[in-house]
Amino acid sequence: MSGHSKWSTIKRAKEANDAKKGALFTKLARAITIAAKGGGADPDMNMKLRFAVEKARQSNMPKENIERAIEKGVGEGGVQMQEMVYEGYGPLGVPIVVEAATDNKNRTAQEIKNLFERGGGALGAPGSVSFQFERTGQLVLEKGDDPEGRMLELIDLGAEDLEEAEDGIEVYTQPTELFSTKQKLEGGGMRVKSAELIYRPKTNIEVRGEGANRIVKLLENLDDHDDVQKVWAGVGILNQ
Image (cartoon, rainbow, N blue to C red; front, side, top):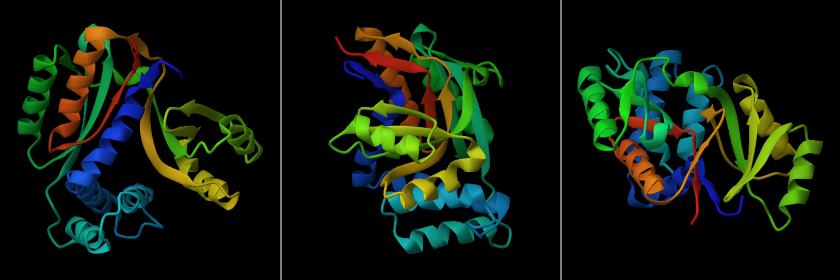
């Protein structure tokens, strides 16, 4: 991994900083509300809610905030929030998928389009980019002092698809197996830093220099939008 960073790694560092500023809680609450609205208030019966609550807890979101977000989703009348997925290309043809939660999809679509265009990219039609990604579960675990040994332990525990990142070891699963894999790894003594469903790029376009700066700036601007929940990109940032 030397000299190479994926957007997913950069984004995790950004999320940690956002959490310190309190900027993450609003997005986490929206994710919980939408999950509860779509599948009910019981995390044991609603996998999407389970993951949303899990991520909120990992970010130290107060319990009362989590409960209030669930109530907004299942309360009488509910919250008129919609989950939207936008696809587009950034500079140098980097494919990007954006998940958003909005109460005004026309406004959000226009604002996301503007961000793409100002960042040197273009918003595409549904399906124009998503074929370059696969929906999968991702767990991030601590590397420890011996990453290679840790990876061998994970393989012994049944992890078949894994790779080392700058900030941990990433384990990939089928979406339906994410929670059971997490339980299995934790039962084997592993500390799971995060677990979520992602859009995993099938390939990464490697960029450096000013092109890399432009792409990261676009991705950060998209991620900072109030309605945006998550941003994925098929890009590898090469150090000079």
